Image 1 (tube, rainbow, N blue to C red):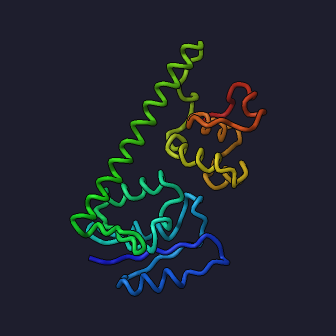
Image 2 (image 1 turned 30 degrees about the horizontal axis):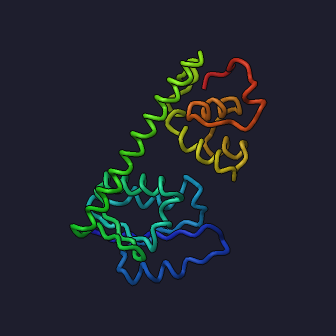
Image 3 (image 1 turned 30 degrees about the vertical axis):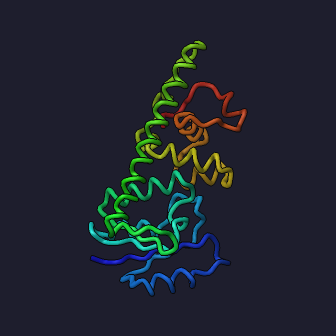
Length: 207
């Protein structure tokens, strides 16, 4: 079984040396690095690490914030590692899931992820009931393709973060039109800042 190190910095001005030295000292067989903001959903070398890793391998990081841009995202990442049968060691945090006590950490993270999903479902149902009580019918916009449904949460998160323009979001997620972008955001339950989007008429394109 291999130890796979992962290091990340947000900008070119930051250096990876501290993390790389720690990962080498921890005995990592291979080390993957990204220079990308934690807000970005796409981390190319992290994805390469996951594609290469096999069940029983251990992912080693310097600190937990190198993995997740928020507590919610961190929980999702740790849950994904658990599903893949991968261990996790965070050198600056008391987390080592190769030990029995560390396995409990995985279980807690997975329980938190399940709780988050349940809360989201409850909020969605409550919102739909409130909308129906006011005479509005809920449900997803018609014609939204499954691919767009799948990426809707990530689109919503980056849109609400406000660090990228709608044009950048469309290019990053390969969304064909601004109208489709707003359909995706409405599907995700996002409040759209653009008044023109809210005032848009019937959707002409089939996403």
